[in-house]
Each structure stands twice: as C-alpha cells, then as structure tokens.
Amino acid sequence: MADRANFVIVRESGEFELYLSRFGAVGIDLDLLAGPAETLAMVEGLRRDDWWLDDGICQGAALIDLGRRVLLLFVWEGPTVGLRRRAVAMELLREAWAGWEVRWLYDGNAEVRAHLGLDPEFVRDRESPVCPGPLLAPDDEDLTDPEPMAAVVTLGPEQAFVVANIADHPIREGAALLDRLADAPEHGVCRVAAEAGVHLDPVRRHVGWWTSGAVPEAYAMPERWPGWTVEFWQDRWEEHVRHAPGRFQPQRQEAELTRREILAEVEERRLRQPSPPAPHWPQATADPGHSG
Image (tube, rainbow, N blue to C red):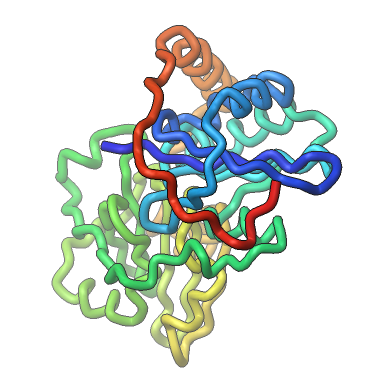
C-alpha cells in the first residue's frame, strides 16, 4: 500500500517548493520532532514534484514556512492521532520547533494550498461517495487496543456507540447517521481512547464533533447537516465529555509515560528507517498555481 505525503518548503522570498514522498507518510509527526534543520535536510532529499495529492490519497503533509516561521502538518496515523497522546505529541513538536507557530491542518492538503494562496478545490475528491466505518459491539476485538481506530458517537444523554474509524468520519454521513444508530449495539459508558467523536442532540438539533486527524471539508460540515447547528471542536475531545456526561469517559495515560513512549518511537524509527527506493511513475501535469 502506498504511503503518500506532500511536503512544502516556503522560502524567505515567498517562493515555494513542492515535494512528494511515497514512503513515510505514517510517522511524519515523529520525523518532525527532529526540529527545523534536520527536517529541512530530510525534505530537500526528497523528489521535487508538481503532484498535489488529493483528499482521497494524501495520508499526510507538512508545510515549513521559513519566512513566517510556521509549521503546518497533518497525518492519518502517528502519535499525534489519538486521544491519549495528542496533547503530549503536540507539546513535543512545539518544543522541537521553539519560536515557530505549529498548527494542525484539520482539512488536510486543502489547507496547505490555502496557506500558499492557491485554490483548495484543486485537491478535493468530489467523485468518491461517503464510506462510513462499521459500528462495533462492546466486545469487538478491535477495541482491545489501548488506542483503537475508533470514533465515539453519543446520542442524547443516554446512548453511546462506537464506529470503526477506518473510513470517513461519521460526521460526513449527515443525518443518515441517526438511521444507522437505530439498531446499533450500545456501549453504555464508552471508555475507548478514541481518535474522533460526534455528539448528537436531536432535541436541540445540535451536533458537535471532533477529530485528532483530518477530515475533508472539515469546515463545511453544516452543509451536510441542514437544519442542524454544527459545532466543530477540532481536537478538543473534552467538549465531547462535557456534552455527554457519564457516557464518554475515555481512558487516560500519565503524561510523562506518554512522553517517554513517543521519544522511544522516534529513536526506533530513526534506526529502522531505510532509504526509500527511487520512485518511478509518470510526471503529473503541473498545477498552474504552482510556483518555485
């Protein structure tokens, strides 16, 4: 399976360079913990390419703006994606990039292009249908992992469900999500350390949602929920806990232990990471908005 990521370096002049990697999108956040100098050297060693990965295949991206000292990033998988590690991982990134603004991209590669003044629509994948993950029973073996690929969905004050977070975020289903929950296995009190979540209040017609990853068109979800008030909590899963008291009580982990685990993963990744083979694929047509 491909492991694709875009990297962008914005020079002090404002000109930018676009790079493509088919290897290592999973774990970008670990690589970035090396700090600006090593990260720049790593990116400059990749292949420059005019291929902007779209929403359907871009598994990660990082933009390094040298003039404004801004680091933008997102990944599908890694220590930054997950409730138990997110805050600590982002703290480590900000330490490694001291003096820089470090910001997560909830709308993926579209936000990279927006930062550059380019049209975000260029990377939209409008042809693919919404593909929701299956609903999971409380005893599903996938939930035995301390950090499962799961999204918690709470309905009103009394019901909790879990969706496998292996496809589209459940928020993208719109009100059809309510129909899916009608016969879904309930979890009572959900203690899963999830990657994402949704809280539905049918009485007030209010939906709040969060993610520690990226969701295509993240800021346009009200269009999928006509007649509802949609509130995007970004990665603030605590809002979900507050809106669903007694239904969502995720397992936590001591911060110092989490910090040691992440740093150990950084070292392990450096030791085992092979040099990627030279890629061989046709040159994509350049985006007319690209410069540098």
